[in-house]
Image: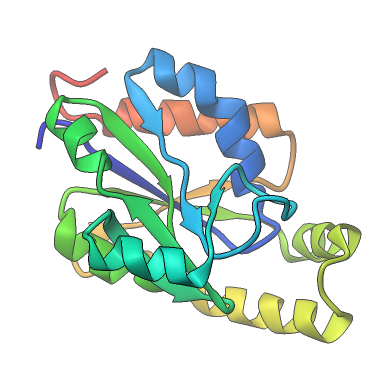
Length: 190
């Protein structure tokens, strides 16, 4: 495949959806497609621009081979449409909102993927989660503890995980993301 998979990860509340939306047009100008995940929750749910489906519909799509990647997390099923393979073959980069817990499996299928971990200072993350109001204080603290486990590793096997801090101004994070993609591009890529 001529394009590369950009695998964006980060804890709930880190601002992945905001970053993806803010970077969408500049990414497309760099021949990078942004993928909408398929998730087993209602389309009316607050959060990312995803395709909401029932568990039955998700299972049917999975059985029919509609997903390049899929996983379970937080009681939901997530899928990345197999159409990304065509974009990659055509030389487009493809950005997906991935799962930290599924990174090793994603690397098995896409060994040259670029893993990016969106990080946020713990007090900023706690405040964002509290402001969002979706979880109890105990659930938020459990999320923060889980997040600390993922901050330990800088690599998976031989693959380096690139960190991108999103504790401050979103425009700065977008600029850093675009810079990281340019710097990490292989010769011949934008």
